[in-house]
Each structure stands twice: as structure tokens, then as C-alpha cells.
Amino acid sequence: MSTAEATVATLLTHGIETVYALPGVHNDHLFDAFHRAGDRLTVVHARHEQGAAYMALGAALATGQPQTYTVVPGPGLLNSGAALLTAYGMNAPVLALIGQIPAGAIGRGLGHLHEIRDQAGIIKRLVDNYAYVGGPAEAPAKVAKAIRSMHRGRPGPAAIECAIDVWGKRGKVAAIAAPAPERAAPIDDDAVAAAAKLLAKAKRILIVAGGGALDASSEVTQLSGMLQAPVLSYRRGRGVLDDRNPFSVNLPIGRDLWAEADAVLAVGTKLNPMTAWGIDRSLAVVRIDADPDEPARYAKPKVALIGNAAPILRRLIDGLGRLNPKRPARRAEIQERQARMRARLAKLAPQLAYLDAIRAELPEDGILVDEVTQMGFAARLAFPVYKPRTFLSPGFQDNLGWGYATALGAQHARADVPVLSINGDGGFMYTANEFATAMRHRIPLVAVVFADGVFGNVKRIQQEQFGNRLIASDLANPDFVKFAESFGAAGRRARGPEALRVALRESFARREPTLIEVPVGPMPSPWEFIHMPAVRGAKRLP
Image (cartoon, rainbow, N blue to C red):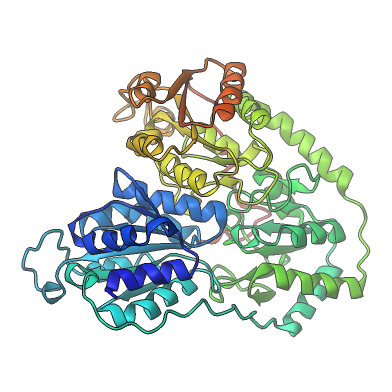
């Protein structure tokens, strides 16, 4: 087999049947191996390397399963870097297959096509697992190890690097082994007992659920009811507790509850932005995380439980059941808080009206992909989410322009449900070229572009903090309807929430690539609900 053929065979053996890609001479033998795989492998070719990488990211976030993209070295790697960095920040299992210059020239500075100094060093700073494949015999083991690394313990991206003259190198390859069954990580029963005892004694508990809780929805729901504990999820953890459950609370309510809590159970979360609210000595924190380095990163918790959330939570529920903690009902209290918050959020009425229209038309299991835009910020606070992995948001990188291409990957991987991409006109233009990819591969993504002709946050800051000295915040836009139509796609314009609702209903029914332009003006600032001060004199953490 060739190195490329051994790599592809290993991908297929491990259940990876799609590659998001942009071809180039450094990877010609790899693409020939893709072709030889026939209908066992689907190649979705993008129009830019960042599009390919973001599509793999979206597919990984929507499914929770490893996804793969491939690009050429140098500029190709760097173009995909923002998506790979975001995958690292979001603990997303994305495998990057990256080409290299001829093996004998690496590190010599000879000026080969796409040569970059210490490419391996750059890659290693963006992923959890890196390997250079030097020939066919070593490809299966190194590729398999990279795939295993992406969902063992803390999930995250991995990368395989291979030189232009190595992909096609042929040699004997040992039989490619099937994936080894995952062994359950041992659970520290003493730590579980200590956590159960602490939570049984606490009077006012807040549960914070992050991306590490996405596969523990039923356990979090059961524990919330048992402890009468509200559950705060802000971005990655949205949907872990169905927002129709009265104990599901948004960020500003969570901040108030944090100030009153005597115990916090943090499940698979960095506790960011909660760390800005501060932790004082009276607040007992129990942390569950797959990464052993995470719990004490900001402040040492009372109890740390290391491993996957679902089995640990089941053990914790059993322990609490034996202690039989009695809790006064808090449902009425939480519902009253939510009513007061709805009154406060009325300040964001323009955004909320559009979000209501979207929620009315997007099915319960449909996926919303947000953006760094006024509608995206409001969605993180007020868009009801009913199931895990149905609200995708870019994590702490919060990188403008991630949304459309990421949503394409989510829609391709989850062809069984509708996916909606919401964008500002600024962010959409980062990957608007991938509309060509949607058409080429008939990916029925519906995208909404809220067009106001400015970078809204930039302009507001310049107005409010810099004496209205405006610079580099205005935009020149195309006619987005004609833009879509130029690809032969459906383009629509919706003026107002009701018109958007009608357009969404018809677009979801048609199941084809669609772009809906929504002309808007300035929108109210959401920042008072997102950036909130420290509480009760607590120490604000870095």
C-alpha cells in the first residue's frame, strides 16, 4: 500500500467516511487514495481552506464524532488555522491531514513551494496530538492513535503531517486493526462520596453545565430535580437541560444565583465567564472534568472528579440517594426570577422578535449556528434550546466569520435535520464564497444575513467610548438576494420578523441552499447581560 492508501484505510476502519478538503499538489497521492476508496468515502471540496476546516468543525460539533479535513502545507495550513484553533478551544474532535514539502528538504530553508519554517511547531500549538508519518508502515498506528486521542479523556483536535514524496511511497503494511474498545476510566469513589456529602448538606446549589456535559443530559436533568438545583448553561452546554424545564436558567439569572449559592456543581465547563464573578471562601465548588488539569486552573475546588460526566454523575446520584437529602421546592422561585428576567430582556426587543420567529419555525431537533453578531449575542441569552448539540457557538475564541462554513459542515453531517445559520453582514462575508460549496454538494443549509452595513459592535464602542470617532466600521455589501441567485440558489429578502418566519417555513420545506437577507438598523446593546461585575466582594480571577 501507499502511505496515502494506508491512511485512508485507517480512517475508514475507524468510521470516518467523510473528508472536507481542498486539493493541491502536495496531497495529490492522498486524493488519488480518496478516489480509490470509491463510494466508501465522501470528499466535500470547499473553496477555501478555512471553509474546509470549519466544515469539519461543524460536523464534529453537531455529531460529537471525529471529523477530518485536509489541506496543503504553508498557506493551506495557515488558512485553516482559525478553525483548528477554535476546535481546540471547543474540545472538538477534528483531525487535520496536512501536507508537507519533500521530506529531505524539511527545515533546510530551500524555498520549496509552500515551505514554512517549523510547520510542525505551529501545528503542535493548535492540537492535542500531532504525528509526522514517514512511510506506509507507520501510517495505520499513527493515524489510529490520533483518532483515539480525539475522544479519549478531554476531546480535541489532532493532526497528521506527511510530505509530498511520502504520501505515494509504497511498502508493506500490517493488517489495519479495528478500533480497540474504549475502557471506562476508573472513578474515584472516595471523591464521589465527598462530593455527595457536600451537596447533601448544601442549601442552595447551582449546577453549571458546559460542553463536557453534552452526553450527560439525562443525568444532569435527574440531579437537578433531586437537588432542586437550577442549571446554568451559556453556550457550549445549551440544551443539556431542556429550556422548557423551569430549572434551566440563562447567564444573568445564573449570575444572581451564583451570588447566593453555597455550592456549585460544575460539569464539563471552564467556568468562564463565571470566573469573572469571583469565588470566595464560602462557595464550595465541585468540579467534574475529563481533563485532570482543568479543575484547579483558576482556583482549587473542594472536590474534583476526573472523567466523563455521565458515569460520574450516575455514581453521584446513587450516593445522594443513599444520603436522601431533603430539599424545599424551588420551582416557583426560579420561575419568578425568569419572569423578572424576561421583563429586563425586553430591552432587546428587536433581537427577541426575530429569535421568536426562528424558534417558531426551527424544529425541536433543528440546529442553530450563531455568529459574532447582535443576533448571536442575544441568542446566547434568550433563544430556547431543547436538545444537546442543537446550538453551536464558537466558544472562547468567539471568532467573527466562523458561522456559515461551520453550519455547512453541521448540515452535511446532519442531513436528517434542518440547520440554520444566523449571520451579520460582516461575519457572513468571511466565508460567503462557500455558498459555491453548498450548491456543488447540494447542502440544504438555510442562512439568514442580518444586514446593517456596519461592524455593529465596533461602531457602538467607537460611539460610546471614543467620542464617536468612527473608523473602519462601515461596510460595502452586495445585494445578498442577487448574490444567492447568481449561484442558481434561492435568495429572499424578509423585512421584519413575520416576513422572516414565512421565509423560513418555505425555505425549510424546499430543502435547498438558501440565503435570506434581513435588512436591519442599529440594535440595543446586550452587554449588560453578558459582562457582569464580580459578586459579594469575591476575588475576581484572571
